[in-house]
Amino acid sequence: MSRVGEIVLVKIPLASGLSENISPAVVIGWSEKNSKTLKLARISAQSDSYVVSSSATLLTQADLESGTLKIACLVLLDKVAFIDAHFLTAVGKLKREKILEILRTNTTHAAGMFAEYQYTEANFTPGKTAVPVSGKVLGAKELQYMVDASLDGWLTTGRFNNAFERRLADFLGVRYVLTTNSGSSANLLAFAALTSYKLGDLAIMAGDEVITVAAGFPTTVNPILQLGAIPVFVDVDIPTYNIDIAKINSAVSEKTKAIMLAHTLGNPYNLDAIMSLAKKYNLWVIEDCCDALGATYNGQSVGTFGDIATLSFYPAHHITMGEGGAVFTNNGKLKQIVESFRDWGRDCYCEPGKDNTCGQRYCKKLGDLPEGYDHKYTYSHLGYNLKLSDMQAACGLAQMDSLQQFIIQRKNNYNYLRHALRNCEKSLILPEATENSDPSWFGFPITLREESGIKRVDLLQYLDRNKIGTRLLFAGNLTRQPYMKGMNYRVAGKLKNTDIVMNSTFWIGTYPGLTRDMLDFMAEKIGVFLEENAISNRG
Image (tube, rainbow, N blue to C red):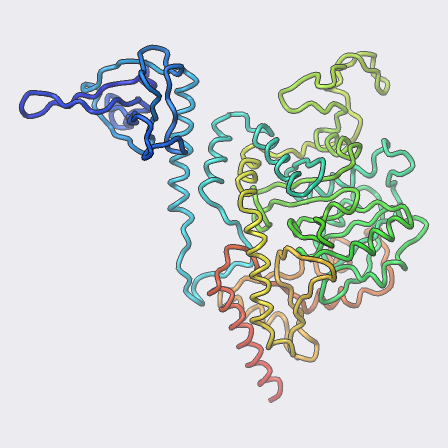
């Protein structure tokens, strides 16, 4: 029988034939090589030196199944030793729940120690060390929370997901946040919700039109196509890279039902103009905020202007949980519809592992089902299973502690690059924030001026040789992508700037893992290339 959880006294024989008592300890494991050699954690009285922490657990008489503890003590998980069982005398036993608590704390403490070594900042060597365009920034808490979630053995959405949704809703200032397994799924769910029969005449139907842009990521537009609506593409403005407000009115027709746009690379679009248009024509507004967590317009968080909004938690984004996304809204009916589409299309809204939340599980008559048919297995939408795991949510919850600092670092990195590249504006169009906005920059977009004579591919290859990461502005011009052949869409006017983005725009990183040395190196190499090629072009 395992001795884990025993309170023991240790007596080590001395050369004189006497023995030396060592402070009491708790058995928390055994040696892999010899099961008779037990792993002990020291027990100590509380003091200024030892307080309850990630490496110390409180122990009281109420935690004991047998034995006596005269005063409250601490189990010190950073004071561990392996001792042969021959030298141990059992004097008590912990209750099962206390044993599990100590073992859990010991495991998460070890994960934190691992993270301290794993995620230390490496030295930067220009030209040899990669300068990523994006990436994740992880610490001890992320690993500890993920390990803690795995120890629950629950796996699907659970306590960490509930805590994450509440924390994110507070940050955004909205009533409802629903997590999902990616930002792309979030866009699908947000748009699908607006096609629900429960919205009556307001529902988006096949053949209805949705105003959007072609200069962006495909999964902002794909749900429109997948659900039978027609995207209407409007040109973008350079250097904000958002929809050209001057051209949006020409896109409206009698079929227009919604506007679905992303805040490009964290730069908010003109929400005054968008919301004014939406109000005038009674249009739904879906804000794709996947690249824009923390951005504001007139001091208000993006995503809280329209009817429904989305986020992504892919490793490149402002916070991460590996894969993951969220839909958020202040509309209670939309929240319930999104939840239905996400959870198999069912009409029931019980959390995983719970039943009869509504108190009417066997009391309803829906569709052509018999009266009293189990509400848990009644389906009101053609749905999916797009939930995430609790381990993913645990990582996201830990990241929330760093979110505000991440946003500040992204803004600082943007400003630093803007200043460092100011002398390159003869050849480059540098990005600009939309008026009245405070972007939370996902990246730093750059467009090569036509008169520079420089080919984008030459610059990107040069940066790649110097291990500087770059990205194009996603799909460039979606209408020219292979998969769009034969698709049903409409273009309002011409996509002149969208084609410029496709041919001449790229972006470099602003993510918090970039150091000043990396930012200096990026700016330096771009400047060197432009200077050398300006000379060769003149020659």
